Length: 313
Image 1 (cartoon, rainbow, N blue to C red):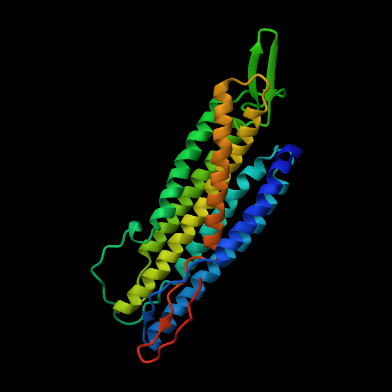
Image 2 (image 1 turned 120 degrees about the vertical axis):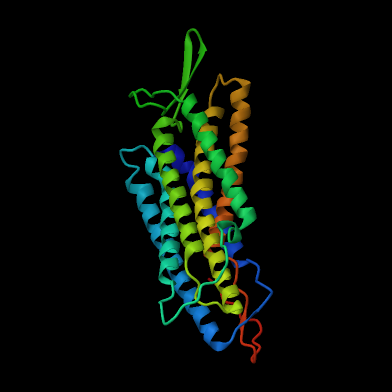
């Protein structure tokens, strides 16, 4: 990783992680308890622990693989590994969610009854977070197209790695690295793969069979599905928002560093600085949801009331 990008990222990553931990620590508790008999309660908790364990495994593996990608893959590839690290992290978390959902599928025992219900992705997606992630995905696509069109080859002929401008007939100026096609094409492919993985994970969450037809058990099962869908959405948010923040901040640094930049470039650079800061906040929120998530309601039996005990994913 070159010195310029390293100096930019280090003071941003540390506050980002601290903010994510702080948000996770102060995440709100659920209010409404679930009334379950002992047999249903044990089934719910067993499925919860198994799904949560795989999510945490995916998160831990994602941190390690992303760190390795950001360091080793950057040598000789000019920081490409650092740009791909958020996508690698998101894919690992999404993979953990998929495995967790597959392992919670109940075994077939005896005669099973089929419930007449229609489950859709919209039943489980968090609306606010999902809307922000969808808007960020579109914004990332538009930003990558823009930087690709503005990019030029550097002094070694690598396409899209430099921003070039003719200041006058006798003077020109260039700045880099620039997130042109050298970076935008592999990053775009990686994000598309991540989005396909997220779609597969959400489909698995929706289609997973029920653990039973009892109304209370169905309610608990829906809570677990919503938590898994939230984890997939949050992992996708980290993948998209962190990538967009990195591209926006690097592009802004190049635009604002020009001595003969036109007014449109200066406005675009300031706008990208604001976008990069907002995407860092969204990344922190998504990381907080992965670390803590929404707490499951307290699980109570009909005969015994237990207060203040919430099950966390």
